[in-house]
Length: 572
Image (cartoon, rainbow, N blue to C red; front, side, top):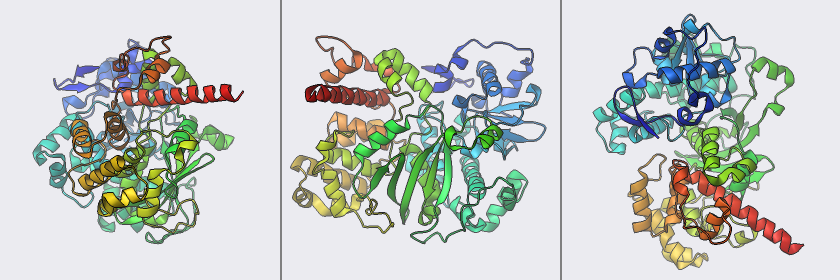
């Protein structure tokens, strides 16, 4: 669904604004919702395109009063008397409406002189979904900046990577986001630093560099100027969790750095783990119970990341009452060796688990478009992404399928053999995590004959080598937010994969939620529940836009369920 911003620029409305019942309902006026409320919703001193429309402002006000977790990260509220901004789920007493100011992002709030709340901690809020109200350029730039693209690099370098001029990039971000690239980067650095100060015992110097600052002096000056307190003041709070002493960043082992990631509920964590477990490569990834772990090589650093779900049941009752709304988060354990690359690492983990999605919006649309049974079975299904786009793409190419199959199909898995032969060994202290995923350079150097000797079919080996060479020579970028049409053309025309494999790579590596290729007649029949003759493929898929990749994943879930049921009946 499309609309026009107040400036007349054609853009997509936020999915929350389109599908959420609070936003879809006509705005109801209460006694405390005066005409001044619309003015308060406007982002202070921002461009017209960054204003929050009055109808959304009224809905946001209702969400704020209800502390609705579905709106966490969709907007922030600033209190004019204290100059503090909060998440809409903040457990603190809600201020009077005339003292509130709504912001579309944390960067806008900080640009206007508001500092983050120490109780609800805006740095933990989920990010924006892929199809948020942004042009593609602004959306990609936001993602790259959040991953540290401007840490130690000028804005011009990022603009050249995106194929635009520096002036055009600045103009696009100012129009769509309301802040400059430097201001956006500074907000991400400060919020990450605040999280590290509050949640870890890393030395302040290490926090400064891990957050993207180039000097401790600059970090202290910017932190004091933005938040009007010293970095050490964050650690004086009585509820700060101490988790072991600080560890040097280049030690391979040591006490892990523990961080928390918030998400919008619901989250089908078991379904996500099942998908990742079937896709896992021995030595690189492992799923144990409710925990997921994998090795990571990034920016010259290597280590291990573990993630597990943190539900309200894992929080003591007394703390739940003090904290307000239930905790919806994942806990992340990161080995100290990865601390220097925390910014890009955390961005990759958010993509891997699809934590910035709005599942209420996605599930409602898919349920209305013929997948109601699948949605009811697994509410909150997330689209698995990638920490390393090439790693995921190579698996799809070598296996000839996007999602995992039955356990039996993994005997003699080509992706596992290639990883065992070409992946670099790593010492982690865990017998299940011993390898780093093969890099594009190593696969390209190995060549076609080596892959065939490892038992890969000639066709898959040729596609794998072509993929590796295209990535190694920088003719193909599998970075998130890339141009899906250009990447798809390269994958099909140069690498030689089919349309379904290309769609899977677009969905997982680029995070393209509308990636889709025609399913089989059997999948159409399973998803649409049409008896007898199967309909023409894709006749229903247009109703899923812009979430067709989620629909395709649910087709796979439906097919697996039918396969397992048939197998059980045959065994009986």
